[in-house]
Length: 193
Image (cartoon, rainbow, N blue to C red; front, side, top):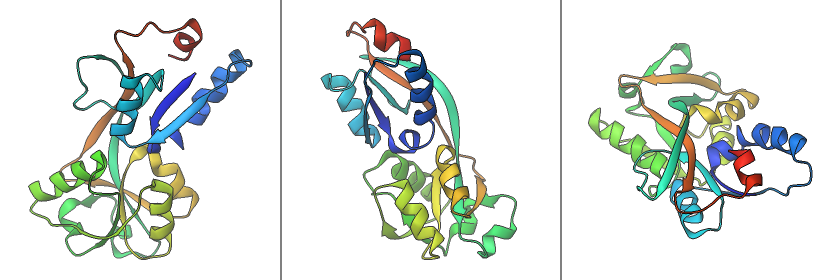
């Protein structure tokens, strides 16, 4: 079974799903491709992957979509940061903050930037990384703060980072499973779905 998954799911939710599946199907090999949303969709479309775990915004009609959860965005902060005293952080409070961010071509970054512009902000993306785990390490060293979907929060908490919900506005994305409508899934793949 080949699964394409956005990084925030591959390193958090997916291991438990695969572990449960492997207990029921010990003889089945699993291959996971981790990447950004566009890679996940292309891997499913091209047949490289049997299924994809990604965000369900702007999914083409050639795919079947199964919503799994709604993920809200949070800010991750080093301990002792002035915003850590707040229970929630408004987007406007990010005005003068140094950001550790994903690349500008990632869908997550585009959503963050669009929300910031709508809130009248121009975020200072001073460090750009390609993985959430790398982002968390930079935040832990105090070089900036990050904005992440809630699926990545376990990583942040394991590093002792402070996590606060982002509000005014609250921003979320629906995470789900995508498969190609025209592709007949093997029974072993259907068992994963």
